[in-house]
Image (tube, rainbow, N blue to C red; front, side, top):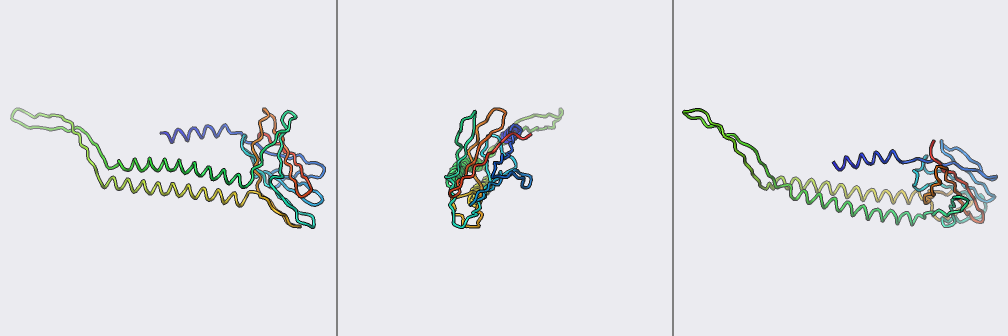
Length: 257
């Protein structure tokens, strides 16, 4: 029953989630594009090019925006890209509010913390599963029995009740074996999910990198959620320092119509 209630609550909450889309406002040295149905922008400087697009077609309202950023070295010498040189600033009532840009190391730390919490919850569930299995061999039964007596003067029927209890080693062993298999599968699934999450971060998230001449480099850029501005769109800028060139990209994030 608790599982059904949780599923129903999740279904109700999912209907309350607001999806938001992103569009870019191009400056003089920039070009707004559509790439496979998604908004994108190219910013060109003399020695570098930056391309940016949202990592997904929609963002969840209140969630972290994630962008895919590509950096190209159009010069003749290596240039350094550093995540700490990326600044995201939101404009709220004409006030600039900085939004945090998460480094790869910070995202890994978050994921490891999530894994610890998940492991604790799985341990509690496994312990409860094992405790329930340990008492599965005990049984209790009760019922009603009727007794009919035939005599010279007629047939007599009497009704009585019975109660029995005991312990079945076979039932206990079967329940414990089931619980052990379920616990092993649950723990293995949790460990594997954590491994996959870390692998995705390693593969996808942008990191500090020296971009060689003629090289493209990029990855996901994770940003803290912008503040709500009532029912209006959220506006913020993403500034990337590439060598001695600064690319400033204006973003409008608004509810899906």
